[in-house]
Length: 312
Length: 281
Image (cartoon, rainbow over all chains, first blue to last red; front, top):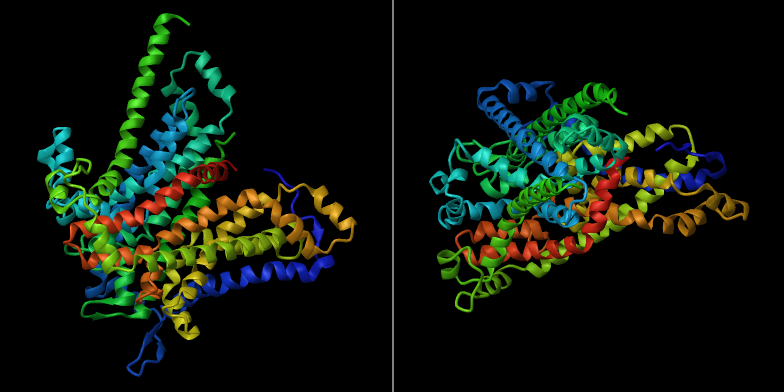
């Protein structure tokens, strides 16, 4: 929306302008920006035996990225996180787009009810969702097998969350189940904003609803799809609650569900016999920051620029 | 319309509704399953997990156990206090900042707006190590105040962004008329602008509330102590302790789900309107 920008000269109201801006800026700076910068600073330090901090340059990064004890864990969690993200991109976002496309069909009855009901899991706490699925997938209860039995697929059922090969993918699907409402809602809104004459013209020319969606609507909502993708990326590389609730800080079995968030928590806070190490934790956090920053910059400078060319 | 086309339309409608109904079932059935089993005896849970509670299987033993062994009242009270106080602070501070950014021309206006928007994309969790140090220095560890401060910082960026967009739409005449009458700048904001922001309040409140209510990370790190747990952390700790007690686990999950379900059904309209209008801009 075009607007004219701020109008009033601040020199007529210096005190009010300062008073309006100061509290928000102060709290935000003190509890968000300062900790982020201070964490990066801490990642260049290490605690000495006396408990003081000593500057160690890039040593912490060397430890995390190439020390045999650490690097394996770090790269394992990084690639697990990439898989976690890949499942969201390949499953969550296509389902979200498909649901949005169906919901935006003309003359659909109960549109709002479907939308409200399908969005419901997104409102629940990640922890609660993790426990819900842990119970349903538990072989002890067996209700998961019963449900598969209804569609005749009982033989497929296994202790998915407990097996090294399937635990991470299962958790990713649980997360997809919870978050699919976000892409659905955002893309639905973008589809509604497409001018109707465009669609009507194509329909008069004999295009089917699928063709209209695929050739006309989808290209027009690609900027929203890109935005959803970057939100997914940031969310996934910051995820923690689901793995911690279902698998604990050790992200078992055998670290097969370890992602950056759980690694950060363990490094910083410690677990079982290993003591927490704040400066190494800050190093892991700084690496997460770099990964997220790389994703956001790629989105801002590559994806968004290329897409804006196609916009109306 | 010819008969054939009408028939096509009808069969297409059936397919569309079948697709939407199946997905609605996938979205709701797991939650439904937890809720119905929370009201059953242990036998009922295992023998007929998919059946509704009957007079034979109905039992509230899970709930009595949960209420007996965990202080759910305190958890709810903590979550509600943290959420309500945070929302109130975020709304007032964000409205003030958004008003200054959208109304006054001052050097660095755009730069400050960008600075305040960084937090929309960068997760505050990455600063946890220093946040904990800071809270130790301030003597706020294991207090709800620590959570409120962090959540206010977390909620401000998006709230300021949404409210700035909203304030641009306030008609100029209103404030100009007030200025001509010699009304002070503070009074213009608190008496004229703040009441006008009300329609955006629901959107901002919901966006601020969901991540706070559902958060596990900061309660776990900043306020894990007895009596300070939020509902999410309380349930997580309770279930960790009583994993094998299915009645108690199902009941505690239901206690966490039901209030959110009720709130969602009341506010879903505002929430969805906020989500969809925000994306169009």
